[in-house]
Image (cartoon, rainbow over all chains, first blue to last red; front, side):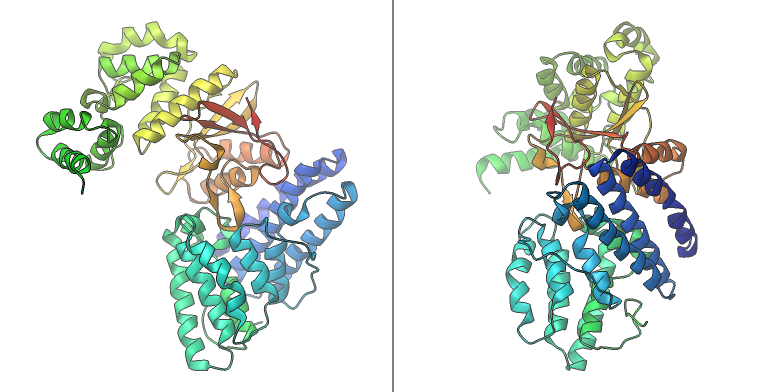
Length: 234
Length: 259
C-alpha cells in the first residue's frame, strides 16, 4: 500500500473510537472516554503526518487533534475533577503540534516528573526558546534516557534536537545537525523503542509513512530552511 | 573468562557444532549456566527454527504435565533443558503414532482443538523462555475459564500480540511473560506500555496494516470490542507464578488486579 491508501484507511478508522466515545459519554465511563479520546487524537495526528509525508499541508488534521485534547480535558475534568489528565491525555504531543502550527494550547503548570523521560523532554522541547544554554536544561533527562533500556537512539535523537536549538544562527552547523536528524529518524525503522510506540513515532514499518515532527519543530524554532521531508514548510 | 563461564561457553559452541550430546552433558554439570540457555542457543543455531523440531514421547509427556499441574513446571523445565526435549513439541501433533496418547490426554487441555491451538502457539515461540510463558498463560487462563483462540495476530515476524482467549464471547488479550513481575511488561516511546488497552489497540491496528491479513476480520472485531470497553487484558508471569487482570486505564489511571 502507498501512503495515500494508508491515509484512506486511517480516515476510516476514526469511526471506531468515535462510536466508543459516544458510548462512554452516554454511560459517563471515564476511562473508556479517555481511551477513545486518545485514539481519536492519535488517528488525527497520524492522518496529518501521512499528509505531510505526501507533501500536503497537515495543519487541519493537527488542529483537529489539538481540539480533541482540549475537549477531552474539559470533559473528563468536568466528570471527575481529580482525573489524572497529565498521564491520561497526550498533553506533550499536543503541545508539540500546537507549537508547530502556532496554535494555542494551555499545558497545565504541574509537576511532570511522573511522566516518562522522553515525554518530559517533549514538554521541554515544546516550550523551549532557542539559546546557547538550552541544552543544559535537557541534559540530565537525556542522560537518564541514555541509561534506559533500549532508549539509546531516543537519547541521541533528543540530544540532536536540543543541539539544534543551541545553534541558532549557525547555518553550517544546523545543516549538519539536520542531516544527522534525518539519519537518526531512518534508524527508527529498526529500533525497538520507537517501533513499539504509537505509529505517529515513525518506528518499524511506519518509518516510511510519517515524518519526524520534532525535528521539524526544532528547525522551525531556529528558522532553518531546508528541503528535507521533515521540514515544516507551511 | 572464569572457569565456569568458559566451560559453558565451550559446551554451547560444541553443541552448535558436531558434539551435541556430549556437550549438553557437560553443560548440564555447569552450575548456574544450565541447559535452558544451552537449548536456547541451540534453537538459535538451528537457523531460527525455534521449537520446530520438538516432537517425541518424552517431550510430549513433559508438555502435558506442565499444562496439567504445578509439579509439571519442573518437568517442563527439565524437558526443555535436555537434548531430547529440545527436539520435542512441534511434531507431537503431526505424528500419527502419538495420536492415541493425544486423544487420551486431550481433556486436560479442554479438547483436541485446544491442545492443537496451544501447540501452534508454542511452535511459533521464538525462544524457550517465550514458550514457557505461553504454556503458563494457557494454564492460567484455562483455570479462569477461558479458551485459547488458534490465531496469530503477528506482523513483521514475531511482533504483535501474544495470545487471545475467549470466555462466553468475551475476548481477552494476554501478554504471556516469562518474567516474575509486572515490570516485565515493556514501555515504549511515549509511555505506551505492554498490556494496556492503548497498546493492544496499537498492535491490532498494526496487524491490520502490516500483517498477513488472514485474521483481519477477527482483528477488526477485537478493535471494536476495545473501543467499546469490551476487550479484556491480562498479563501472566511464568516466574512469578501469577496472573493479573489489567483494567481499562491501567497503568496510569487504574491498578492491576491479581487473579
